[in-house]
Picture 1 (cartoon, rainbow, N blue to C red):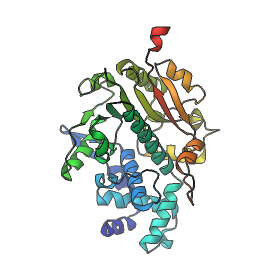
Picture 2: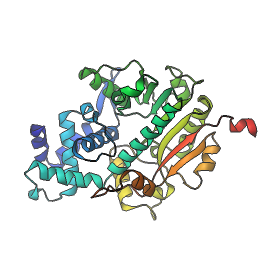
Picture 3: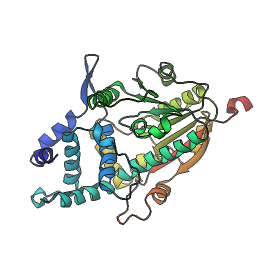
Picture 4: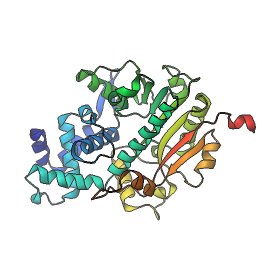
Length: 341
């Protein structure tokens, strides 16, 4: 790791950006494709937190294994450079560098990424205890739930749904590390420009007669509003009663130039540079009504302040949770709304 870190410390800005743009490129069925770069960054954030922070808001102890040593070192340097604009003042000692990186990450997207992971997994554990038998991870990226939670896999099956490129890289890396995949885990590669979600799930072990827990993290704000609610509706028509969905979203103010916070605008600019622009937000006050219109009942709707209070209280240097971030949990009613209208 020391050798990789030294390599990136000497790269020019142009070389640094070129490396970033090369992350996630692979081939699927002989075609050149690009995996989600934000999936790599999310994995790094979870991995760095697990390795360097105590207490832990969310302990993803296996995430680092899905990144190469070179990628991990690159992302460390990325956060280091973000804080230390004058590289002539670079710290020589690893502990000093790590302190700078930690501070940079706490003021970035780390709080949102850890908070949403904790929220969804806490809700999932409760759902499994209440009888949910299948989990569908939408836009799974480098999620490690099925690799970490052997204690739960005997009671559920897990279906990971993602773009073919991102999923191909993940599967290649799991195979390379010799990781034995649990029999209850199934991958479903979906290009949503070519296939809708219900059709994709029909190619898997998904059972529409059994209550399911859907986890949809880090995706909604990359979709146009019409597409977003099309997915919600298709799931409500495909899933059994008592199914649940946990998701995160940005509020509409995040997309208003006069109201968006500086932190979130900077985040939007960065992901646009990575080729993954954010497109739409939701109105927290109208969410209950909007979800009801596509078959879901809103159960929880947390603001950024709620998230901070639940998961980051007591930290000496508290995590910042983006002002416009919200976490939500919705359920399918036992009797469908269409049946009573």
